[in-house]
Amino acid sequence: MLNIHDILETINMIREENLDIRTITMGISLIDCAGDDINAVCDRVYDKITKKAERLVSVGDDIEKQYGIPIVNRRVAVTPISILGGRFSSEDYIKLAKTLDRAADTLGINFIGGYGALVQKGCTVGEEQLIESIPYALAETERVCSSVNVASTKAGINMDAIQKMGDIIVKTAALTADRDSIGCAKFVVFANVPEDNPFMAGAFHGVTEPECVVSVGVSGPGAVASAIKRVGDCDLTAIAETVKKTAFKITRVGQLVAFEASKRLGVPFGIVDLSLAPTPAIGDSVAHILENMGLETCGCPGTTAALALLNDAVKKGGVMASSHVGGLSGAFIPVSEDAGMIHAARIGALTLEKLEAMTAVCSVGLDMIAIPGDTPASTICGIIADEISIGVANTKTTAVRVIPAVGKKVGDEVVFGGLLGSAPIMPVNTYSPAKFIARGGRIPAPIHSLKN
Image (cartoon, rainbow, N blue to C red; front, side):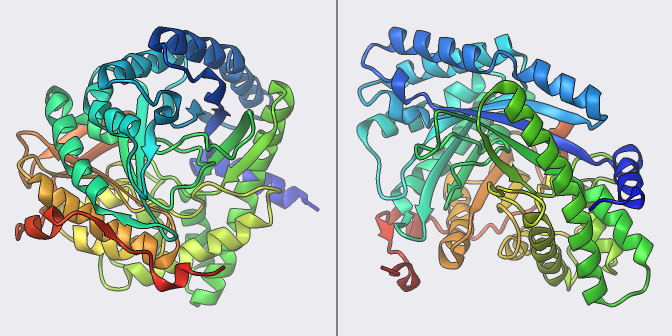
């Protein structure tokens, strides 16, 4: 039972500590829109999305006003687009991407996800055509987000797909070079991708999901950082308990919003993703949480251990607060979207290699990291392969969202604005994995995947 202290504490989290609902995301199945005629498919896709989600923004506004809980984004995730047209050309898929963008503009949402494919065991002809279209689709749209799942613990790692990903990222960076290569900020490469993730850029509506659902992604790094600061010089067990209690309260807010949105929209409640999603705003940083535990700066020795404590405590506290927890759920470490991470990267305390180590114990992976624009595609493939292997070996979701910023070198910065923030260009190991990547094929699934 909540008491008056809990209520007042939650109000203070909202007013003073940047607690918000990061997104309400509606998942919409487009399987019944599939067909051979691209124009007919585009019409069906546009009509279905705009009809199903026509009240998404207004309902979010109403809930925000009634409860005083900030809801930052309203988004839509759709069935992986590669499923809709096995015979489509890359040009056809680009037309579909523009249809998604037009639907998002009509609805007034900030992002629409699902322009992607699931290729952990191999590519169909249609999936190959969609993957080839990704750079152009992201360059020619504003709100479309794309993801490709290239590996799973059950299937192993599709190195042929990873080889394509390096080329796709380099081409996307070039096509959006006039905007600090922002197209790459809308593209994620996954292992073990969840089918119910409400967060962009990796959100899509899985084929095992119902016709339509509404899910919520919460955020509250500032509230957790403040709670740790208040408990003072206690031991790590007490810090873990503090994080658990705070995560419970944060997730209850998400559960309330998800329940209300489901009821008012007349669609099933999907999940609450209880991730700590930071922003560039001061006081809303995962890095600052770790520093409040006693680290001089994020990235110093001890950072991975502190992050492991945080991630575990967030999940333990949050899972009791919602009837359905899913998505990514944990602590995000996107460099450009976290004020503390940005500072640590600028002063050299946080390196690409340290970030990779941190991803073994937290949500997602190498996220929103800007690297030199002349980084070879093979090196980007090597970065992806390393990160994806962590996910496959540990039976967890990992991902890569890197931005080879055209014309930028180490010491420069990219500036995207809004939630995407800004980031210093981080150095990359210049020794080449090109011959290893060129071998192609598949890295077999680990032995612990054989659980039948």
